[in-house]
Amino acid sequence: MKKKSGIRGFFKKLYKYRIFLLMLMPAIIYTLVFAYYPMTGIVLAFKKYKYAGGIWGSPWNGLNNFKFFFQSGQAGLVTRNTVLYNVLFIIVNTVLQIAVAVFLTEIKNKSFRKISQSLMFLPYFISWVIVGVMAFNILSADYGFMNRLIESLGGERISFYTTPKIWPLILTFFNVWKGIGYGSVMYLAAIMGIDTSMYEAAAIDGANVFQRIFKITIPSIMPTTIILFLMSIGGIFKGNFDMFYNLIGNNGLLYNYTDVIDTLTFRALITNSDYGMSAAIGLFQSVLCFITVLVANKLVGLYDKDYTLF
Amino acid sequence: MAETIKYGKVKMGKDQILLNILAYTFCGVVALFCLVPFIMVVSGSFSSEEAITHNGFSILPQDFSLEAYKTVFKEPMVVVRAYATTIGLTAVGTTLGLLLQTMTAYVLSRKDFEWRNFFSFFFYFTTLFSGGLVPYYILITQTLNLKDNYLAMLLPLLFSVYNLLIMKSYITALPESLIDAAKIDGCGEFMTLFRIVMPLIKPALATVGLFIALAYWNDWYNAMLYISEEEMYPLQYFLYEKVNNIEAYKKLLANNAISSSVVSSMSLPSQTLKMALTVVVTGPIVLAYPLVQKYFVQGITIGAVKG
Image (cartoon, rainbow over all chains, first blue to last red; front, side, top):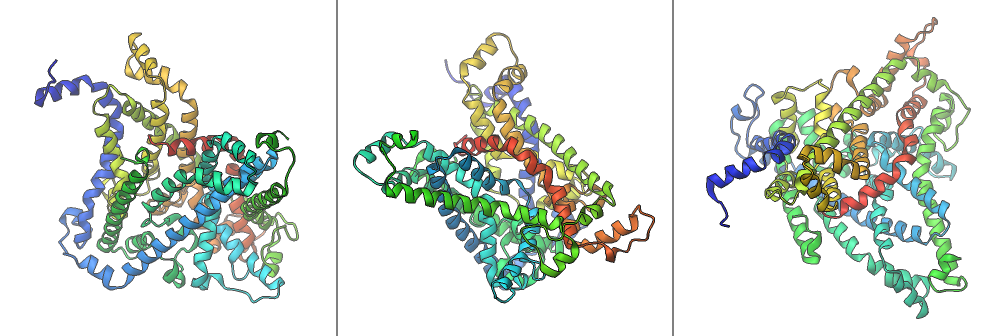
């Protein structure tokens, strides 16, 4: 039979799929309102926002919002911070999550394995607000546990919340802390999928347990590792606002080391009510994210076509 | 013993013993690191304010005291209200979100729907590019005029493409003949979805439902952006606000104190109060956690497989 085409065919299909389309309608409307409509708002990046005029009535401002963002030096600073933090997080998380997965599978005592895995998973369930309180409990200059520890060891108190340099370490700690149980699950699943006959063959050949780990386990989970790594590369220009805002808040003393694109966008909007500049930073980030996701996806595709996202 | 046989070995070699020591130590230490901050918050909440001001926080409670909890419950309604808001939002949001996600995933997984790829991309594209914070903020606060409206906390988390993908991969995994059979028996699409598909994907509903519920339970961001009415604060933002403005909170507690004696806000604890408040907010989720953990583990591994 000849395939129907053109307008008539389209309406026929529209009728044929009416129930499907009805079922999709809520999600379509939601996505149009909450995702596609806001995309048109990026024109604000080129405007001087006036409340009365709204998005469309405000006067054009050319590239001034971007000019200010770049010339103030903030663009370089927050982009550098965002990328460096993400690189740091990706590397440390990958290494530690794999280590957890490998070691957990080596633990033969079932209850020890279960309990330790459950404890590692616990931080994933709490909000960053609570993590912020925990960080205060540990790091507060006057009441913090860390300073108590340092003093009892004969050291000098550290005022963490006024010492920017130390924050890459602290932020990495909490980032790893919150995600280690969750992140290691993927690697655990990959290890469970390894063909056990390989281990048997290795044992017959006289391989010791470390050779077994480094020659079989690690290479076998390499595909998973590379896919997850490339996928996280896609988010390298996204700062975790929840984490930075709850641990740093409005502590300007630390900004040189802790300000990321997302926190700057937020402050430009909420603290300074500078809609145009905030929109410009947001657009800058969206474009960078878009490009990196495409590149990362391309790389995933080159590695293994089955794992590409689109 | 069974495991050593699995690797074809009769007895544990030196390398195996060393590996065991490494594995137990590493996992034990990591697990302890994950637990200790929780214990320290609990210990801080059960300590006396003087002990904390003098010595700082510690792993075990110092000078055991319930003062901080008594202070929190001087005005229990404030906490109860925040709980009610969060529970309400979580219940409504999870139900609606789950329904929305399942219905959408069902259609997108139907092979006889020729436009499914177009619509999949229509949804997927929104994870690749977004308008950013400002247009979204203007949409909620001005276009939709939802400032100080519960919808401003409900709508932003209702639909997530990642959850949609998890759901879709579960439904796609069902045998096609099942849906064909339902059709032959005269089931309409809605009936097929609710009577045939939904009962079969209960684990998926549990997993995705928990992901949505956790997102609502832990949300503070939307409240911070869109809610200024204190009575409407959900739990997490309530905690954020009180911990960061502890003096204002103490004033409120002192003024509302039911006891006949005059309470000055100065006499109320600060540091231990922050910890007690955190425990009151965190408690239920930590207690519910052992029950739900396995569904999360399922979800993570499924979600990683392409939808």
